[in-house]
Amino acid sequence: MKAESATAEQAGSGQNVVKSADRALVILELLSRGRHRLSDIAEILRLPLSSVHGLLGTLVHRGFAEFDQTTRTYGLGLKAWTVGQGYTGHRDIVGLALPLMEQLAQQTGETVQLSRLDGTENVYIAIAESPQPMKLVSAVGMRLPAHAVGLGKALLAGLPGDELERRYRSVQLERFTENTVTEPAELLAEVEQARVRGYAVDDEEYIIGCRCVAMPIHDHSGAVVAAMSVSAPTPRCGPDWTDETRAPLSTVVSSVEQQLRR
Image (cartoon, rainbow, N blue to C red; front, side, top):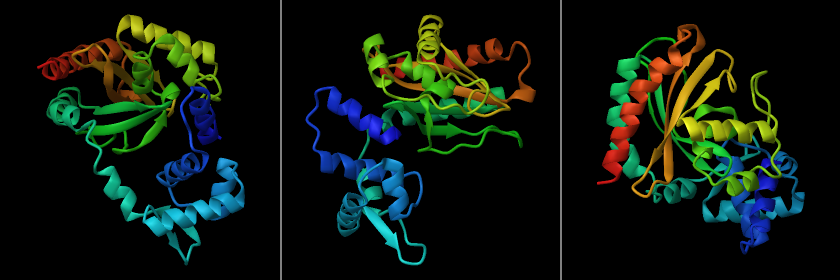
């Protein structure tokens, strides 16, 4: 359903969308999250079974997808990985930020994450793990709904108001915990608050037992190009945790921004 909404948004934005190519790319996005049977792909994406079968055949032929005869499932092929390695859009910022993130993880004792925004999803591009045994577990490349995490809201705060409304016009906000924002108006209000104060928070909105504080990273033009967060298990978060964590996070974010402006 999410994939279909994204397609509708693109078509509505005036872009020249080729339906078959768009469907093939949506299938690849789905396969990037795990293996699926043909019928499941058609059902999840709400596409005709015959169309999905033909598109998968083409993707397998070109090496972008692979078919497992034993499990009767499709997954990403080696060509998808090869093409992905050609994307270098975030490598500069990762190279600049990761050493500082590792220092911040040692300083705070918590996990530090760097992400970028893709549509309405928060995509992790670098992680410095907490040195403590009990810590947040995530992975580079993982995608989470931006509305449910602090990093996502920090990234959304970098969008113009009309663009933010456009992206969420036909998207249903999924609930993950009782704290998740599910009303568009409430999300817009939280994003505006993050824009004004310069940081966003996640108070057990995606996972019960996990909190985070996140800040946007701006490039030389002032555009938000990424966001960085510190995440911790709720039992380690005292009443002043947000303010205490925000100070060292702000220092690191400022340092990354200064290097980006050189």
